[in-house]
Length: 100
Image (cartoon, rainbow, N blue to C red; front, side, top):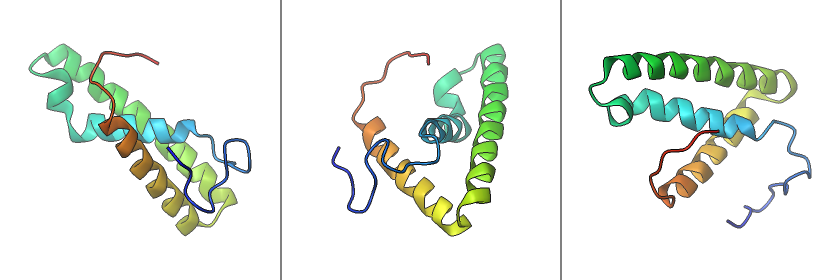
């Protein structure tokens, strides 16, 4: 995907870890679509609920850290850009089981 004007290429000034983007997407998916992920399996639902809480804590940690060093509105704007990019990427991927 081409880089938007004004955005640094990888390694050219991106000071916030890029894994923040993935963590935000995972947490949002689990929060917004838990039924699609777990169906009616209560044990699996509990597992994913705990995972979503953990991912939420990671998200908060990285956002708080970014806001210590950068303007809060700039952090929010950048996160929004990342989420838009991620939504585009994910919409083009096939659905499959994966771990990271």
